[in-house]
Amino acid sequence: MITATSMTFIIALYIFMLAAFTGYVVISRVPSILHTPLMSGSNFIHGIVVVGALDALFNATSISGQIIGFIGVFLGAGNVMGGYVVTDRMLAMFRPSQKPAPAKKEQQ
Image 1 (cartoon, rainbow, N blue to C red):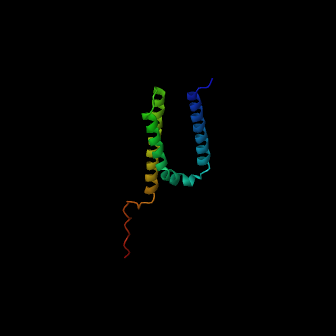
Image 2 (cartoon, rainbow, N blue to C red):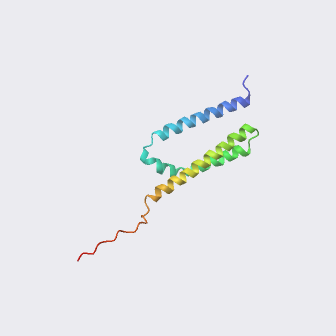
Image 3 (tube, helix red, strand yellow):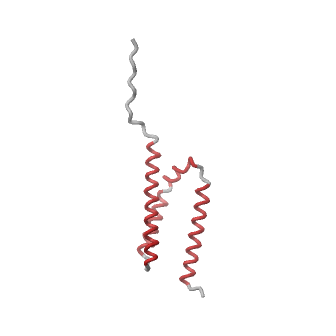
């Protein structure tokens, strides 16, 4: 017999698998030239993921729920940090170089 708790778990697992598949398909079709702007533009989405994972962690009633919530917070924070690192590297490409200009030889 399927209880309400196991049915909730099955629905949550289905949504997770659907989201993972959709994310994989969407990201795999993005050209590599657009990955950096896409990553920098999606930092706010990763922030929302961290907030959701914190909510799951704080409202967990079992050890397994707390572990899953902690892993969610850890991975979401890693995505946010990685997005800012990639954005910083991307913006560094457009900064003027700090190298001194080569000295010109004087003509006589």
